[in-house]
Structure formats: structure tokens, C-alpha cells
Amino acid sequence: MMKTKSYWQQNMYILTFGNFIAGIGFSMVTPFLSLYINTLGHFSNSQISFWSGITYAATFIVSAFISPFWGKLADQKGRKLIILRASLGMSLVIGCMSLVTNVYQLVALRALQGFFAGYISNSNTLIATTAPQKNVGKALGTLSMGTVSGNLLGPLIGGVIAQVWGYRLPFLLTGILLMSAFFLCLFFVKEDFTPVPKNRQPSFRLVFQQLKNSSIIWGMFFTTLIIQLANNSINPIISLYVSQLMHHQGHVALMSGLITAIPGIPAALLSTKFGSWGDQIGTKKVLLAGLLLGAIVYFPQSFVTNVWQLFALRFLVGISDAALLPQVQTLLSKNIPHQVSGRIFGYNQSFQYIGSFTGPLLGAAVSGVWSYGAVFFLTSILELGNLIYVRKITKNS
Image (cartoon, rainbow, N blue to C red; front, side, top):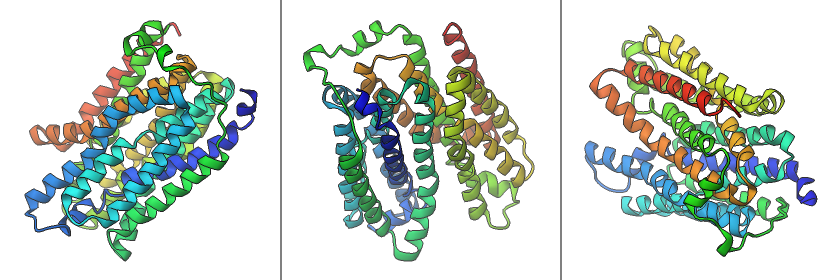
């Protein structure tokens, strides 16, 4: 184990790059997915909307179901092996998306991309189980920076490449980059792993019966879901809300893109810093502060009168995000035994994916029944409720 720990920083930097590329792979299709689908057949507007929704959701739905399985296998075979499987599989699948000739092939490949999920969750597991305990928060914050940066830059990179060279090239380039992440992990990531025999792997129920702080684990799963739900709930209505604030004039599309992307900047820049603060003053304190800030800054977004007020508040959302997911992952790592950490992080990844595809559904439903501002109001209530819940379950920890 000491040999592995001496490589934890090298592992962290390589896997951060991999998380960055994986983040791009999941997010880059956002600006041009419907346009790409439109080139694959003759569709009406309603059909394009339908196939775009199915194609986008397929990856997250499959990932939500399959992530715990890969986490269990990682506990048996090693986290590095599962990371290699994920990067190689996603490389080939995303690369093949550049070759599709109809929408059915694209949906199938997007679902297959979800099947090969597990890069990010097992990167977190590997680092959480090999980094020194005093540096876990910083290390997981750095990994989170890579993921957030990829999610932030993915739509921008994908949109620019698609605009200049066509819709197929972004898939091919992402596949090539993921292949580079595969080889970097293969040759430079070190793991001194002792396999847990299959017959000694506890069942799902037994895993949680053996945990001393199972309420904290379930609380972190729920918190992960709420974080992702909050971040994604505005996706269906952001351009419409911005258009309303700009009185349907000016560069609505550009401003919508900026407002969508702006939370990722402070989240990427501050994740490592907040992780370090968590190591110093307590992970729980940083997490509670992030939830409080989130509850505060979502609420006034319901009542903004111009687009710049919304822009400033969305920047503050990014600061809140930087204090959330890395701290959730750190609390998980500190409250679970290493022999089941792969499964626990896999379950947490499932909750993250569930939040990713239920958030837009909730946002669309709430805005349809009430108003665009009601989406932010409800999100603030959810963040506040989560804050109270997390404070309760971590009171004695």
C-alpha cells in the first residue's frame, strides 16, 4: 500500500485529465444534438424533439442502472481495470457515433456509452482509497475540477467544431482523446490492489447493515441527486427565461450559453481549494456552507428583472457547486470501508445520473404549470430542505 500511496499525486493528475475528457464526452452533444439528428432522416419538429430527448437521456438512464455493477466488480478486480474498461469502451463507442447513418444507431450507441460508464466514479474510488487521509478532500476536489471543466467546455468545444467542420468530427476527436486517457491510465496509474474474493463480497443489504454511519451514506446519495437536479432543472427553460428578460431582443442564444456555462467557471477554479479547506476545518462545515449558499442564491433568481442580475447569481451558484460534490465524495470515503468503496461510489454515481435526467423533466413540468421563475423557487426550497436534512444526519459525526 505504501508504494501505491507514493504515486497518489501522479494518479490524481492523470485521472483528472481523464475526468475532463469524460466530462466532455457526456456534454459536448448538447448544442448540436438535434441538428445532428436532423441530418439522419426526414423529421418533423416534434419528431426531432422526441428523438433528441430519447438520445440525450439514453446514456444517463443506462448509466444509472449499470454503475453499481461496475462498482462491485471494481471491488473484486481493482479500480484501475474498470477505469481502463470505461475509457476504452467509451472511446470506441463515441468514435463510432461519427459513422452512424440513422437515428436508431445513434440511440443505441448513446445507450452503449452509458453501459461503459464508470470512469469518473472509479477514479474517485481509486483516489479516495490511495490518497493519504489528510489529503483526500483536496484530491477529490481536483478530480471534480476535471469533471466540471469537461462539462463546462464540452458544449463549447463541440459547438465550435461542429460549426466549422461538421457534426461528426466532435465524436471522432472525443474518441481519440479518450483513447489517450486509456493509454495514460494503462502506463502511468499505479494501484496496489488486493482483490476481495467474490464469495466474500457482502450483499447490498449487508453492506449497509455493516456501515456504522449508513444514514450519512444515504444522505450523501440524496444530496448528490439534489445537486444534479438543481444544476440541470433550468436546462429546458434557460433560453426562454433569458429571452423574456431581454424582451425577446438581442443575442438571446449567446447570453443563454453564457449563463448556462458561467457556474462551471468558479466550480472548476474553487473545487480543489474547497477540498483543501474541508481537510483543514472539516468536510461537513464546507458542505453545509455550500448548501446554505445554494438555497440563498437560487431564490432571488425567481425575481430578477434583467439578464445581468441572473448572470451574477448563476456565478454564485458555481461557488456553491464547488463546495458540494467534492465534499459529498469526501464524506463518503471517510465513512465506508475500502473493500466496498467501489460499490458505494457506484451507487452515488447512479444518484448523480438520476438527478441529471430528472432535473430537466422537473424544470419543464414546473415551468409549464406555473412560470420560469417557479423553477428557481422550487430549487431553493429543495436546497434548503437538503441543508436541514444533512445537518440532522451529520450532527454527531
